[in-house]
Amino acid sequence: MIRCMLLNSDKSYSYGDESLIDSWREDKSTMLWVDIDSHDKEQEYVLLKALGCHSLAITDAQRDRHPPKIELFDNYIFMLYRGIFHSREDLLFEHLQISMFVGTNILITSHAQKSISIDKLFSVEGEKFLMKSPITLALRIFHYSCGIYLQKLFEFEEKLEALEDKFQLGGDDKMMQEITLYRSRLTKLKRTFSYHSNIGSELKILVADETPIINQAELHTVIDVHERIDRLLTLSQMHYDICSDLVNGYLSITSHQLNATMRVLTVITAIFIPLGFLAGIYGMNFEYIPELKAENGYFYLIGFMAFLSLTLVLLFKKKRWL
Image 1 (cartoon, rainbow, N blue to C red):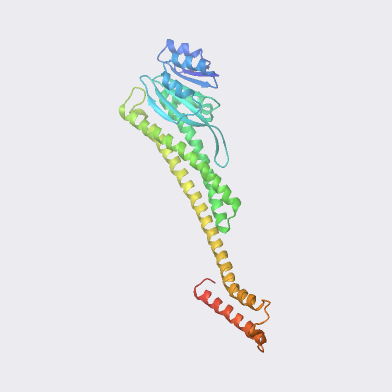
Image 2 (image 1 turned 90 degrees about the vertical axis):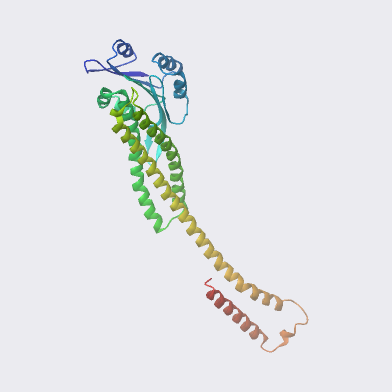
């Protein structure tokens, strides 16, 4: 599906299909946003090529998976980032690769599925940004996607705090499994935000270079986007560290408990080994064992065994094993 938003020379807006591209070509004072959603790749390639997009950028845009990037061409800025198709609780995101070709008076967005940020701004809400410039609109789309990530991280922060308090009262394997799952998801998010942070840094460089597409007028918007990306990266790292601390803490406690159990078992074994040895000797079925003829020999043996046990217990207490 191809849909277009056209800012006419009289400041009015028109919505329609690719037929608006001809109107834009006839009047270069107009601004155009072309959104390509789930379109045939061959037809998409032909359309993008006709609009002046570089073949290498088109190839990157049509790949199923490609790291987020930004690249400056002669008449376009090509941005590729990881947007959101659907978001759920507990940091579950269905990611979507979004490609943007930004020119002086045109913005082209391409994606394989519905995009939350693009659907949000392809309306009256996005008109004011297109009126400023296509790069402003592109940055706002990117900014809105980052805002969804940020909101979900804030919601997760509250859940993580509650989980941390609950964990302090007594963790178990089920909680450990849950925390490990969150840590895995945060690792993936950190990787995405790291790529996006590079895009933010490159945008600041492009602003400083004063290109026809992006200049100092967009500085505050670029800084806002870059700060939001940095905040996402910082928050995801902080939450990851908290999850790691909880995991390491649980493992340390479990290891300590296991050591305590093994120490008790070792003490019991150390006490009963000599007793078992003595009982084994005098339980052997020999004809001649002189001590067996001694009067009160049984009581002597029991007394010695009790003395030996008590001595070992006192020794272990002195060594703080008990």
